Image (cartoon, rainbow, N blue to C red):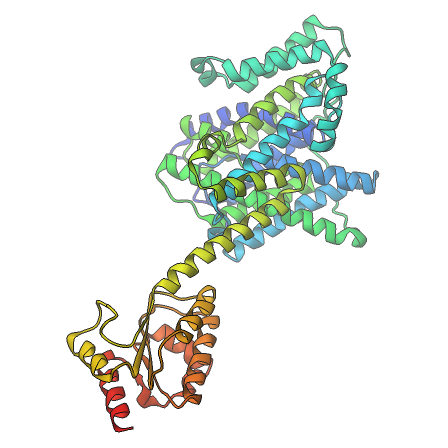
Length: 549
């Protein structure tokens, strides 16, 4: 795996313009995500800088722009709140240590080549947890939109909503509604030149500064200018389990978020990303962000799309987006101090609304009831429990149902043939003749396709329900592979048949199947003259043996 993406400067103009456009889109979102996480606006910008720069250089998607995203901010807010409550003094350092650990796990995911597996998740699960994240973002911004301090959780936000509505601040609500109006209804030709979130940020802030008394609504406040200080990671061993759990949650979510965005970039550029290298790049970026007090990040779909449309083609675009943000934060920190929380809340509510999978929700009445229940269950668990529980439960249920369906298909592919009355296209005229002459004394157990542990019970049941016979033939000609559970079930059937003084044959093993059965010493139950490559020859041998008995 190459350490750096293939960087060149043949598209320098397009890459710089793409990076500039992505930075303009990223700035208001980074500020908003930073405030929403509880770590502060500067943490959001630092996260965009470090994750954006290092993920671009070390990642595997040449056009991807990375930085804080809605899903990652939701998790980081929970992490920041959790450890700050446990240890108010060192809580922030513990939280950023978790970010570093999360990046380390992402690097391990890439090194162990897990990239191709991470996005192998049922669509209802992805839809449910992404929509749940959207609901969380919206719910947590309700209080700031009304002029109050943000609540730490969705449940507390809903509980405080009636009181917050009753005591709303008209100035904050007005700014928030203006912001929502701009991000939703800004004419497309204008938003192509200046992104609507940036317009909303400028209009809302200028409106507050020029029309409202200072301090009349909550604002970001002082933002440190200059380079961030190095944070020395701290691990409390009594909190180690909680820290590792939170880090794995960040790593898993960031990996899913990034690789889904990589697929979007592939679709737009007609290219193929390197999933494992992308995970390494994202991990390196998050590790550096954790060391310098930045929010964790991932591949950001909107910023990536903007970059591609503006001409970005290489990692230079993602890296230049980070450098531009760095230049801004070095000199423009004081200019952001008067940005109202209500304006950031309006921007984030649009982000939350966009994250919700409206397209799938509109189709729910057309999909099976099981899919509807699964999607809504994952959504509910995401909002009211946590993301990991939602994904684990969703994937487990989806896999159980899928395995059951595959099991039914596999069992239907098994045919137990005792005479020519049972149709099987693969039988030759001579094979049908032998089975008919045997009068049911030869039982052909034919399996079509791969078999797995899910079909073991059905395999055994089918044989138990068959008619009495003197010779049992397992035809594996059409079996490409076999797992250990199925092999052990096959051994039990072989041993039982031998104990009942039946002739037992195995036919048509390929090298993969033979290797599994040999390693498990299952073939040792049968002499070599009972292992055949050809079904007709095996039937002739069985017929001769039972005729002589």
